[in-house]
Length: 219
Image (cartoon, rainbow, N blue to C red; front, top):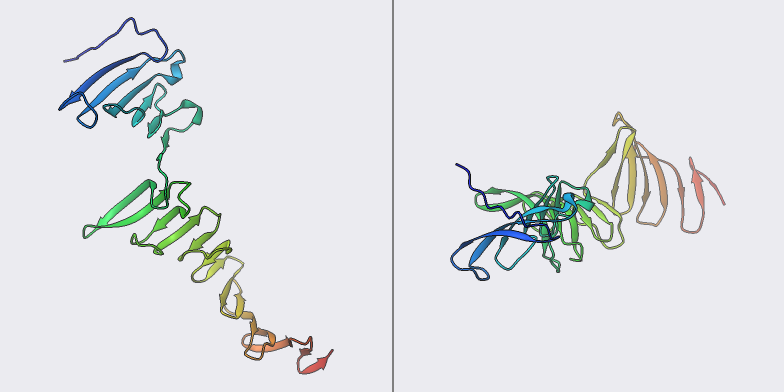
């Protein structure tokens, strides 16, 4: 069985044909399913909105879907989500699962004017629980929140196929790809900068500029 609601006179750009359903034809009391005619075929759309609103859910002629916007075909995106929100706690997109009725975030994208995270992959939903956090400043944290002015914060080892870096308070080191040799720079308690291999000092530099190479001092 098919039902048709056809308006053959729908030739004016922006003219609509609608079905209203719900409790009453007032705000927050009903919904609307409507077709919007446009001169440009790509901009013709089907919308599903609460009464008195537009652009809540839109499907364009080409199949592009808009949530929170008109789904403009100029974005060249099959799915366009716009939060229209302001504030640090506003989330434009949240994909999550649940663990014992507690949200466990999988992916979260915040409103770009929020001032906090822009994109994050979460492990348990709490602040600082991100597996990956990208801030509006461009700072990126992996396993932790990047501090102000730190472009890349890695909580743990950073590994490459050619070796990896390790770092703590006053030491930075690297290991080879086979993970069989360790080299590091360390600033010791006497403010002497040492270069070591396998834990053995090869040379050092004091804060006065004195360089020691295999126990031979020169200035």
